[in-house]
Length: 270
Image 1 (spheres, rainbow, N blue to C red):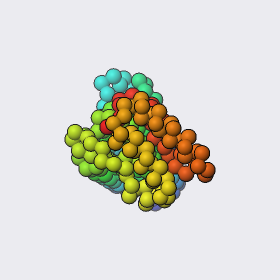
Image 2 (cartoon, rainbow, N blue to C red):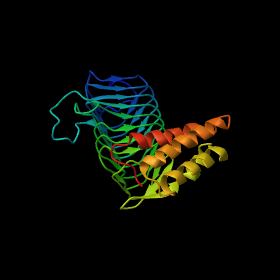
Image 3 (cartoon, rainbow, N blue to C red):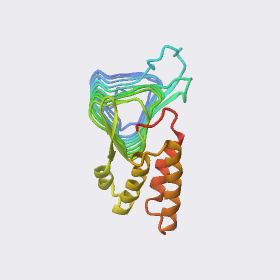
Image 4 (cartoon, rainbow, N blue to C red):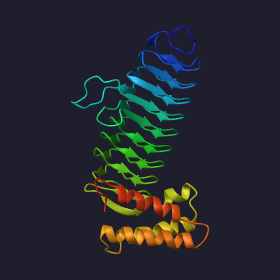
């Protein structure tokens, strides 16, 4: 590995590591024996990549990142748990991603096309989807799930086991201790729901009809004074109504929102 012109001679790469021939590694980086790195991924100076870590193609990992370290869990006893990172992610300086634990999936997963800014921490057994944005110093405790296209603001902390739905947005310096349903915008400490992430949905190509359906769902869940059980029943009725209008415009979106709320174990931000 060290003879490649793309690998700086000061990098320390275990002979058992599996790096595609097109991988570039910067000065003083350290890569452990159980690491697999896909094509055209670039590893910055002083990065440490260890543990049972698999990284896909076309990632850009900036200097001083630490990926694949042991989980910060006192129950961890050296089991060969994993970190899996997809493709085309940008991972900025000083990020820390840990491997999983046997108490959960045994794997921390980061999807593809994510924009992950400096000092972000992704703890053990987290699942981060695709095309998310995690701003500077966003911190995910263990077992957190973040859906596709979600945005987590800078200095925001997410409590362990919380789920953040697809297309949701948590604003700057928020304290998230309950699940955040898809499509919503939240912020603050204590956390408050501010409405639909309407601008984000428009930017991702949601039509006015789809957004209108989600506005109806939002009113049922947050503005009618309904109990959660009654709101779920009302959302079921709305899904049936949207299905009956032909073309199912917005029906699948409302169904996703309804199913997330029904499945929540920590309770939703409300």
